[in-house]
Amino acid sequence: GKNPQLIMFNRVLARYTNSGDSKTTVKVSTMHQWIYQWWRGSTILKKKRIPEIKIDKFNKRFDWKAIFQEIIQINDKKSLNELNWGHLLIDEGQDFEEDMYFALHNISGHFRSHGLECMITVFADDNQRLQISQNSSISEICEMFSIEDDDTLRKYSLTKNFRNTLETAIFAKHFQVNDHEVQQ
Image (cartoon, rainbow, N blue to C red; front, top):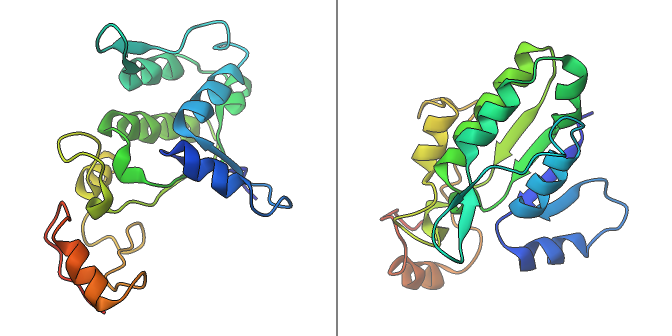
């Protein structure tokens, strides 16, 4: 009964996923596409710029803490409902920054404090991180959402390899960020 929205890090994967079943009601986009639509869907925020941090002359990133500060200043239910994402599914979660999870978790708490339901589901794999020093590990994502290691209702881990042969998995293990055991 929620309004599901799937966001991905990779534009090519989002485009490929969108090209599938045309009968689905799940909106698929990149995080950048999603945040612009989400922000501009608000009567209050659409006239404001999305807060960003300038990295250098050519690069910038979203200022998730400032985004959170903007949202928590909104206290009427109608305006918050315009921002309510329903059920946000995040694929390739390991490739998004920690501050995004901090903001989304706290914004969803703000929604709930005003009687609005929303959900976030994250799919992530530490072994598929694009950069070790950036983005988020599964433990960091869990920390942002206050999920304990033994919380099997909120954290589900796949431990068996269903993607490829044991030989391929053993070979790929040499390129993994983390040192997890390969199981067939």
